[in-house]
Image (cartoon, rainbow, N blue to C red; front, side):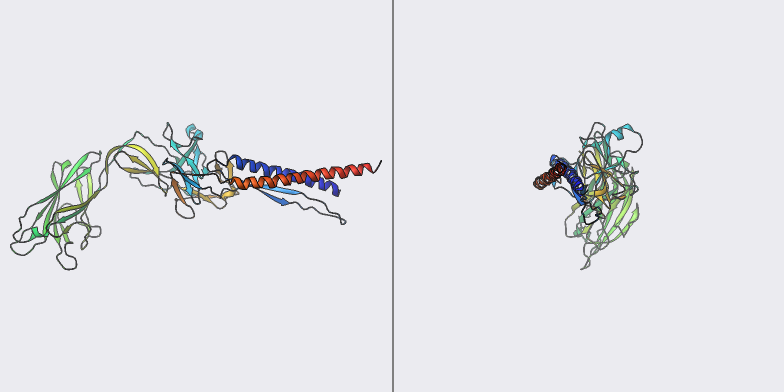
Length: 433
């Protein structure tokens, strides 16, 4: 009966608008929830067949969609491990309870922001119990990426804040100017000495002593020096001796012309380095390229150690961690050293709005979202990891309140339809009187 279909349509309208109001209520309630993604209610008309010129009301259907691809604004914080994603992509996390249970690999969930801090067990976790996940780094700070289409290679990020570490020095670069006047006839022939501190395999301080002795000719200029390198850890023994010749042409005057090894490793003209062996192992010494002024030079009358650079660090205690834009988790030490300990990828999928929503602003991949891929942050379609940042709620309260007014009016109108149908049915009943 047509009038009955009108009643059913009114009931479906009440149900649809009640669900819409529930979504609006959730959005407003979470207007201050960091990383919250608002729910949108979509209405669809229901059409049923009509016969004999009469019309049958079909009513209204509705679907709810969580707009995961809508991002809230980022706000700055004072915590280095407050993280958000600037752009597309999501952070992999796991439930702390699963991690601590030790029953196999924890389930990877996804989120777009989190305030992570170190707990008592060294896990980088949120107050709500989410642990950040990443690929662990090797001892030398490099990261062997795991599989990109599964979470099997990811591990909960954990470290020891009381850990001591020291990095041995493996490379030293010398930026030194030698006085050209000392290689001229009548020069004093004085040896210039330079000491360079380095760190051995146990983080202890050692010293390289580099001496430069000019070759003084009887006439003219030799433009030649003898360089000796001795190592304090080897009892002061000379571990490398080289003959340095400098160019005095108009176009390349003062730059290296040749490096000849007397003892020690041969000079590599492609890198501008020689290899010597200190007590703890091999070490590269950068002298500069032939014809370039990027290392040793011979100009004027001044001995000037302008730039001495080296890697390695003394023993230090971890004082904190930071996550850079590419997702590398770096441990910082009070010695000034920094070391990569994990790399956090960003997960992306074809339809983020198809993810299954869970508590605590976390999501699980589903058949509707499509399979995910773990990208390096900043590569492919993904954005970068923003530290010292949190993502605000995507809810716009003004819009939600406006939608609430419209929903209230629609609900009242559907209630009026039911009331009108009731009155019409009453009139039909009164015909018999």
